[in-house]
Image 1: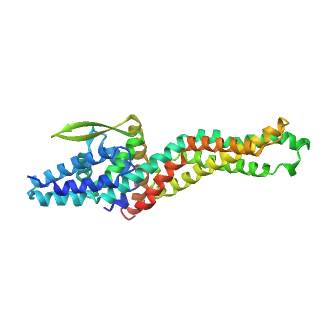
Image 2 (image 1 turned 60 degrees about the vertical axis):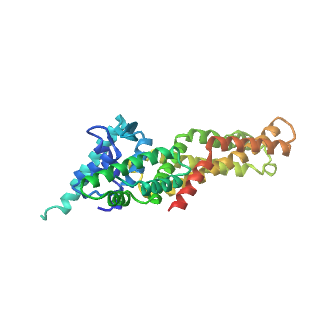
Image 3 (image 1 turned 90 degrees about the horizontal axis):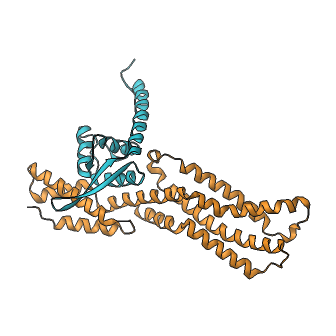
Length: 107
Length: 226
């Protein structure tokens, strides 16, 4: 799937990957790839600005640690991020339900 | 063993393109961690070190593309800051409206000579424009972050940079006009140097509060990175 097709949903998808617990950037991207069975195979560099935007918006927070001698940033969902994720999920279910009722199985 | 010369070159280019961002080293360190981890994963998958690094770099995207994403994100951040500070814009931009309001009783009583009030119409228009600008700011301030689509990333900084400069200029004009009115009210002959000085002071205050050059610089970055 092309990055352009995901633009309206990328932030919500990133929030969803952090729902189970804190992850670093590479793990987030791998989880996106795995859970979408390869459909969300984005240029990985484009995910980091999105994470940065989410952090500035207060929806996620990050901490630094040192792993194998190099600095690593780990992201976690904030309370505001949890709320935003719930909102995104509600909106998506409504939207997907409406689309499915039209594009799903023929009547 | 991974030959890191290509990685270092890539990261240096990324760092060069991130000039103007806060903490570019954090972005570079994060990119390094990602690229080394991705390379190691491809090596475990059977590729040799060079091919694994090439694949990791290719999947990561060019330094130009990655840096452009960060600059656009910063533009949004700056725009949101301006929106959060809209009460300051309101404080500055309320001067012309307040001035016009002060003059209304005199106008209604017919004691004010419009011929000697060349700035009144301008002040009234400035007040109307300010009200419209602040309404736009208030509206934009309530756009939910997750709804801020990519297509907003250019028009929003354009709008906010224009608004910032307008308020700054307006602050200068309104302050000068207010000085002239205050002098008249006090029965003192309005002095041009005094009005100009207060106008300059008002403009400088507005400039310090609004800091339109910050959004303009980011807007320039956005335009040149597209």
